[in-house]
Image 1 (cartoon, rainbow, N blue to C red):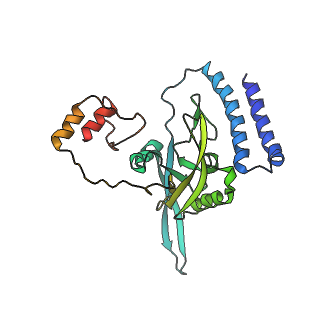
Image 2: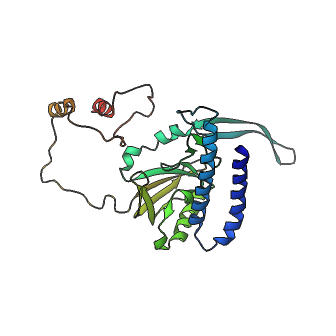
Image 3: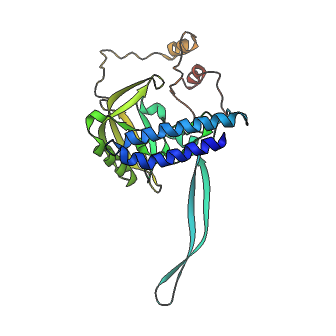
Length: 275
């Protein structure tokens, strides 16, 4: 029942305070990971109860971020002081999906990704952020901290370095840092670790920082061909016309960012268009 779910939620809030003392010897990431698992369990029950009363919306949610700016009226007084009067505030909402289109994922590389962090350490855009569970929006979907998605390798003893990275993003600094991180693959069935290079900078006149995460040894090795072979236009067209090839379903080779009305029958058809 809904009352039982509310009771469980209150128990988790109480456990937060108790476990903060009991698990003080663990890292912050381990603590938050445990709490997140407990909350996901509760809201899974909650989502199941809602599904019995309302149909599931397959369209999901369209997340947005708000941008606002104050308008002030300035006037000088006779004694040399300046008065400022707030006239109003203008604002608009920007869909997160529109921001994602600007990150140009196909230029980052198959093993790299880009994400945005706000000036309080929360994620605005990240490929591994999951705001929904069973079609229900999580209550803390808009305050997911960087440390809850990017995980340090515990064996590296580099927790302080990761906190330094987070602080640099909050302060809007520009730089780079190499850290030993954990990552999941095979649809979250397996976990491994790797050295990852983080390049970061602030976005001018915004509270956001852009981070580019790449494998540490990216572009350290390359091939030198003894002979460069450039296919002719006719050979390229002949290859495209052949149906014996396919595009990986999770990879984007090229895409229009501001032409959502243009549709393609398949990823192969889209690639053929650009070629």
